[in-house]
Length: 138
Image (cartoon, rainbow, N blue to C red; front, side, top):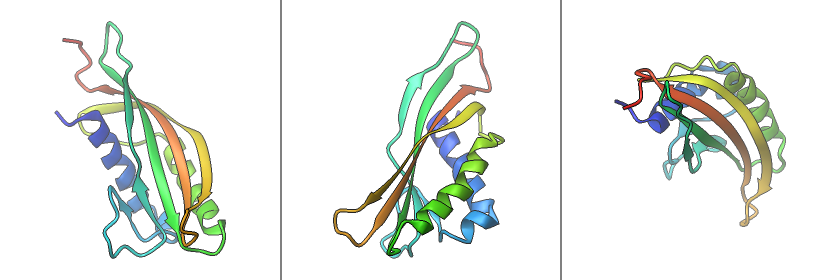
């Protein structure tokens, strides 16, 4: 069985890469950006996973972090990227391997000037609830 984190990340990445509006702004969506990645791009941040099980199902609560990186002189590029990403995530029509997405909500947005002053970071934190397709607890 695919891990719930891997299933969710794969579904989010596929959704973002398949959307022409998102890809007009960013050059890629990565777990970790390659050294030759061209700005702006999206990377996944650290995950946090908590048990969300009940008597009738095995579930997980996820904190999903998307980091949008830019070298633009202002935050406008990141605002535009977030504005295109949020509706895709809110639609919650993601297909997960071996798991089902119950809900995905946007929890927080932050826009940060990176310390070296050469990059800007847009952080999108989401909360997702998933359960295994085989929902019977062991």
